[in-house]
Length: 343
Image 1 (cartoon, rainbow, N blue to C red):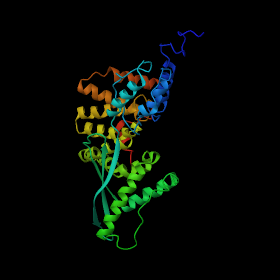
Image 2: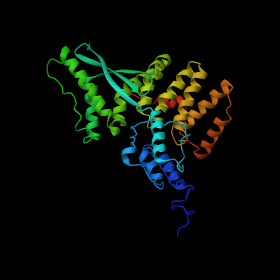
Image 3: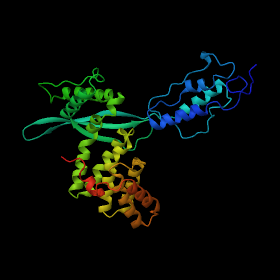
């Protein structure tokens, strides 16, 4: 007869999921897009418990895509002896604390802009984040030709994925009629929502550039011209939107954050410059091979010295990086940033 003290037997109450948990943690570290553990996994881990509840008494909970799990780990451990009903109730409580993050697109208004030889419609796009209070509502303006250019680029990369996404057709006449503008604004809003619903598309460079690149080019142009206050104004409007669009890849924010650092530093605002640098370092984490890593640390060491902050940790990271990679190209942080988003 099998001993009840051996793992796998009904009487065994010791830990049975240590290796499984470790494997899942390692997989999550390698691929942050792996699905979070759901009720099905909880039920699988407790399959050794006697007398499971019928399916009708256990309401399965579906994890919403993009949900942000809470940091509180006070729930039951994987080797808990809780009943299935208790596990389901606990899962319902945890579900209530999630904050699904999504972006909504609205065409708030449209205006006719007249140039010397042409007239065209400019659509105002408002981007807001759902799931929590959004204090940084983004507003950008784009022409129909900008939408059309993005759509052609997306077709080259995601032809099959967007084959069912309807792009508003071009009218040969009456393009400036109020009814035409209103209808096209509605269709463009639906078009953006359909694109955003496709994960590969919303993470693509074409989609992100459509919503951020014109403003970033303007900001970096002001930086190159020494118009630091104007550059900071534009960066302050586009950075929150870029952060929402590139949450899956934080290093994408580093050039813009370093531009903020350079502007504040040259305006003799070392505290604000240091705060921007801290954000940039957080985005880089331990990516020592990134081209901004060493120049950013060099700038941060100087700022820390100027502000009287503890620079031992920053200097240590800089020295370690130099030992591993003796040469990083010799560019200063400002020399790197002025090369971004060239016309």
